[in-house]
Image (cartoon, rainbow, N blue to C red; front, side, top):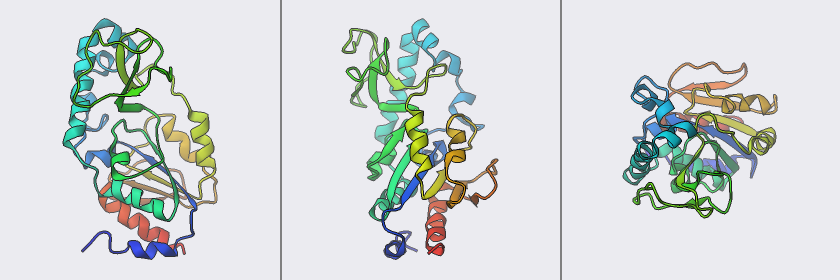
Length: 246
């Protein structure tokens, strides 16, 4: 069966209503990118205190850069999957905003045009003195390693544009405002175990349809339509649910 064969039916959906999506590591796992907190995730193999904190970078910048350079290079070896592509397709009928905990660029490569990365982006670098300085945040070729001695615009050591443990998560007020305006809210591929992203669903209007796609049983608020499935299978079931609402 062609997974896209039902897309023409989406013309029946209300035009340009706001679909807000919260995505997590589970959606990219199916493209071959490791999760963090699963039993086989990255933090089961590596000590995050030595790889993902400002203190770790100060103590051993080469070790931290090696870890992130490997993850950056991996992005050249993976492709967006069906779930990424379907979310991009939905922009033809809805005003779609994707709020992602992921630091990969698979949503953008699938064609999504409005993606908010709350935990940063592997494809960018910034200043180790002030990571939020807009003059220092820039795209950086994924096949070019970040090296000790590479400088940001302010003269400090370049670092990945990633929110590390212990760092402030900026822009959440604007993200909350987006969630408050949603006509539909979808959670896909996240266990809702990491705040503040895990709390975003509580800012969605209580009357709007809410959905969650996850292969594992996870705690979700009452009234959320839970689709127990992988992201790539569950996304089609989600679209079917939208059609049923019409």
